Length: 400
Image (tube, rainbow, N blue to C red; front, side):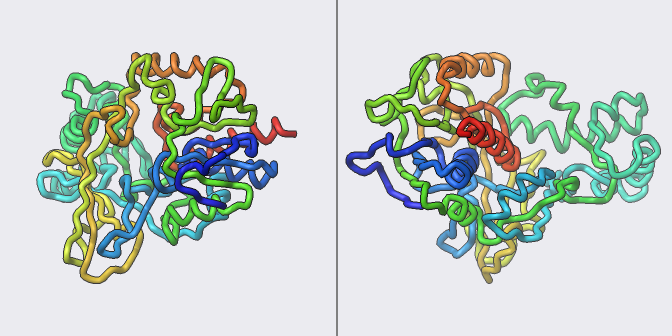
């Protein structure tokens, strides 16, 4: 892998069989597979000054490994995804746990047996738990809508508590909505876990952290003689996409293009900007070994921020006398402002606008939108890797 900041003079796109826009998961997975499976020469064009997309991590001034764009916790039930990524990293045994700070008391999330006893007291909580067990069985997730459908006052009491103290205010902060604007179908999916397992991803068959960090994982993935990475390059300066073709540096490009950026930005927002929520992430280094008992604490009824992450709790890194935490403040995304678009706002009118942009490139047979920005959707890490593996399967099949 050759990494260059900026495009060299005389850059020739014809020297590459595949051009990938974006060095996050979607682009990097496709680049690696095309290079090693098809002997394709691949150019990765990345607007930022680093690889790894939003999974990028780095050592801060205190010596703590931090996730620059918010906490990334690897978890999956997809064996193919796990086998592919495991070629480029060893994994720690980290099991993610989340607590909700509810009126100063830390309770496991998803809401479970322990949470019930903390919220309602030992005796009352146990009685409510046994009602859950007798109704639904153990070690199952039950949406609060299903609790309400039982026409049982005790189950409704649990549902009301979880809605008010775990879901409502957190969601209002996260999405900038009032209670009446929150989709009731989303509200109803908020789960209660009937059991004692307090892991956030109890059904994941593979879970952990890359032993040397995410950036190192990406360095290993892109370490191939046929992959060149060009950082600090805005693809809009070199690429134009019409309804039938791709032009790079003023010349038609006939190789495959995998585009992982926002489609609306590629077309200058001329149909309007696709709405997102973004995050203002405030890092703070403290002169202490540990700040909180778990990696993430959600502030579900108080504070302007949604959660605090403590990175050492997730990575297992030992840095005596220092720890770095991060508070997340959700806010509306302003296009072309330098903010990072994190969460697509999947309202019908927004998805309709996305489809108009997508229709523009539908006839460009060598142009492939991939990933959460280009597809205007939410992906967990394993989901975007799975999708990129499937896309690369198609591209590989087309080569044969």
